[in-house]
Image (cartoon, rainbow, N blue to C red; front, side, top):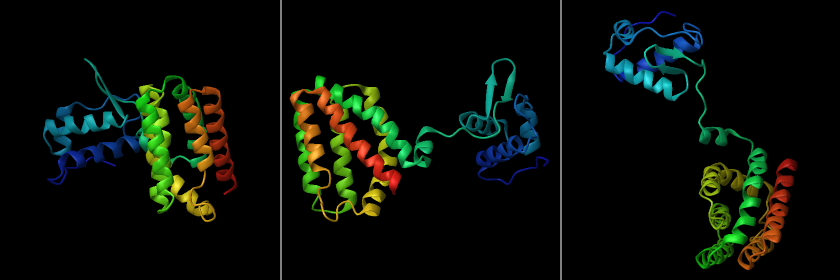
Amino acid sequence: MPLGALRPSPLVEQATQHLREQIAGGEWPVGTKLPAETALAKTLGVGRSTVREALRALAGAGLVQARQGSGVFVVATEPAEDWPTRLRQAALTDLYEVRMLIEVEAARLAAERRTEDDVAVIRAALARRREAAHGGTAGFVDADIALHAAVVAAAHNPVLTALFAEFVPALRQGLIDLVDLLDLRTGDPNHGDAGHTALADAVVSGDPETAGAVLRDELTGTLAQLRRA
């Protein structure tokens, strides 16, 4: 498909889309050097600054790469998915398996490293979870996640905290759907209170083995329910 002159606006978006289509269509295979900015600008009927911005967008999507002194080369025909997008598209069972790896160790570390401030936050989060049991599913799930986040934060490892935060948006909707699908709160509005209380107590008392075991049991049980759903 030949390149053609573009409509006036929005030029950068149109230029980016045109070039993306050419790359995806095989006009410039992987490893190919793109025409110079001047040539692309002339063909597309836009300024060099527009072409430059379009190439930046393609580079951000992982399609092209600028090599100093050599030019811009095609490095992929499909855009790379960013991490949040990949998480949103992942199966909840897959998320839970990785969540177990992150949170079980975080709980162990939290029991070893928690401060008085952490203890206060964890106890308050447990209380809010119990209060949320009297409300709707979304609020209950938010309170549940907040308690888990408080435990992860008490590990005082910024990488663990950041990883958990990345999982939260995908986990939240998945948990809301799961609770409603399995009617987990019909007979017990405060579903899982015993396990969460045991987790909080283990972290507060400084018992890493129990903290890790309690959380592993809780997440393993939920994962089993997910696989049966």
